[in-house]
Image 1 (tube, one colour):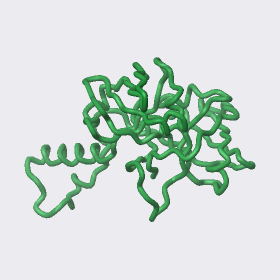
Image 2: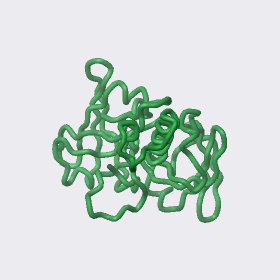
Image 3: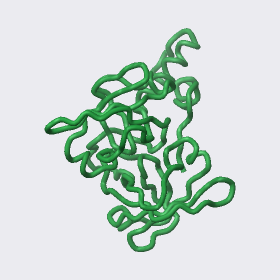
Length: 228
């Protein structure tokens, strides 16, 4: 679990194709690698990856073919900057919102409108995710927790402050660039719970203890999450 507060702007050292359309990615990130161990989780542009090895300030992770196809990680090349965040620790402040590191879809930068103290950026919103995005709600873009300013049928906008522009990849994303999107998991749980009750025709008698209520929130229509 993550918070969407980027800890470090890292750099891809190399991407090595492996068997069955997967790849091993090496990322330089001295801060996040400083206490990383084999098996730890680090979010790379919003995708939760499992650390395979650490060598100084560089960590490596295996990326499945499914992840390469369903996220923007498939376009990474050596030298590319990436947003990095270690898994949240219990007891730490939740500066952003609850982020799983499970990418729901890939969006696209549609426009950028600079202002004196911030910048408004519009992103394309895949149809399957539109129902989870609401004005003033939370969304994760390339691992960055953001508040939705406006939302349409196939787009949404956010306002980026100077800190976000200078310390994350969102400051240099150009029109047409792909970005990883993760909708607020609470919206997906609510949808699943309400859908189960509608199918049953009545609400459970006591709380949320029924089998339907405890089913996976991602078992319905739309793309599933991506994690490596």
